[in-house]
Amino acid sequence: MGVSPAGFGILPKQTFAGQRAPDSSQKFAIARTPLPAGETPTLPATNRNLTMTPTLQLFLVVSAALFCVGLLAALSRRHAIFILIGIEMMLAAAGLNFIAFWRFGPQPAPPTGVMVTIFAIAIAAAEAAVGLALVIAVYRHYRTTNVDQMDQLKG
Amino acid sequence: MNSAAFIVIAILMLAAALAAATLRKLIHAALSFALAFVGVAAFYFLLGAEFVGLIQIFVYVGAVAVLIVFTILLTRHDPEKDRGFNWSGVILALAVFGGLLWAILKTTGLSIVPPALTTALTVRQVGELLMTDYIWPLQCIGILLTAALIGALVLVMEEKR
Image (cartoon, rainbow over all chains, first blue to last red; front, side, top):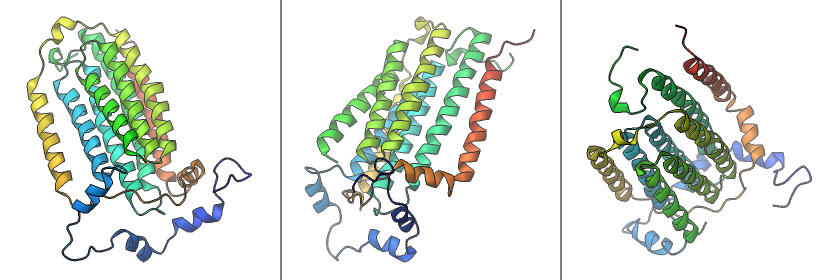
């Protein structure tokens, strides 16, 4: 793809419009070619790909690990800010899954995973802002950020 | 997409995330949080979603990490009360990780290589989609961000005695 005069890397409009309205039967036909009978689906692919490129499985394992580190932070930390950080990590792990599934899907596909991740990042930013404001507001009452000591409902 | 970059980024990101989850010193933990999110953005770059990677760096490393550091500085923390680790959280997180790992490894058809990108995802495509198919989510996000901004301001305003 050459650089178009309108700007760097910008596609001509008709390629974009053409790929967004594919024949719906054709869209799913690319993805699921049935395996030949008697062939185990995982083993040959794993052997071939471990040396070449990371597979979807590896991305899912990494994002599951990130999710669980976030869960660990949210559950075992006493400091309110770091519980919030753990929640942000779990959201990022979900976004990583969305991007990975978009990238490993049949390729001329509308970037739905990308869009969902963009909105998730915006919502996570709003959540972080309100959460940190709550931490400061609670700190004014209790003079602590330790969640174990916030044990009263009245202000 | 090459696997050396994948391994390096994965190890860096998970180490930084683990440091953010366990370090005692709050500023160190906040900085490793920022590093972990640089790692997530690097994954987005590796997967061909450059725009999302840039947004991730702008929003998390640029804004959220700074907010977290400011909140740490504004609240006084007593490290003596933070002693002792909540081991039930560790056990639960490990159990969830085991369950997820079992489900991922059990699912057949996941060990596929990425198909070649026929057309790179450009910012123009993302912008056009945001203005056409995703216009209502975009408006809702605008309202949500406005509400969050006003709500955060109201929450931290001085209370009337």
